[in-house]
Amino acid sequence: MPMNSSVDTVEDLRALMAEHSLTQLEVASMACVSVKTVESWLADKAAASRRVMHLRHLRAIRFALPQHLAAKRGRKA
Image (cartoon, rainbow, N blue to C red; front, side, top):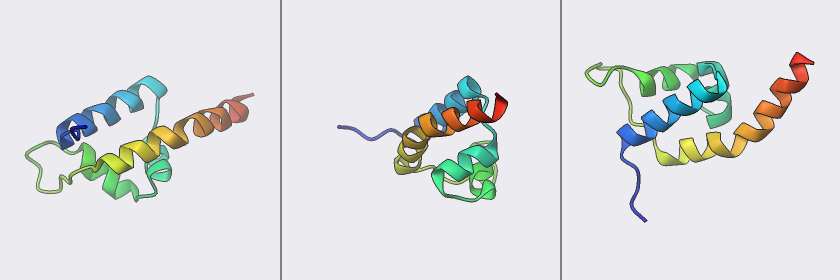
């Protein structure tokens, strides 16, 4: 199975964030990284601070997302 390129991974992250109204803090928590790391993943391609997002982080976010969303719904009630 071919791995996603880092561009695809970041685009997938952006799509998840938009679809579920996720903040960078929420993403950082689910991926077990700092907010600064999430900022660097989302940085402009030409930015010196841009970092590669590994597929394992996207998988961790997808794994944690259902529980996170359920907890988020519970806080709104």
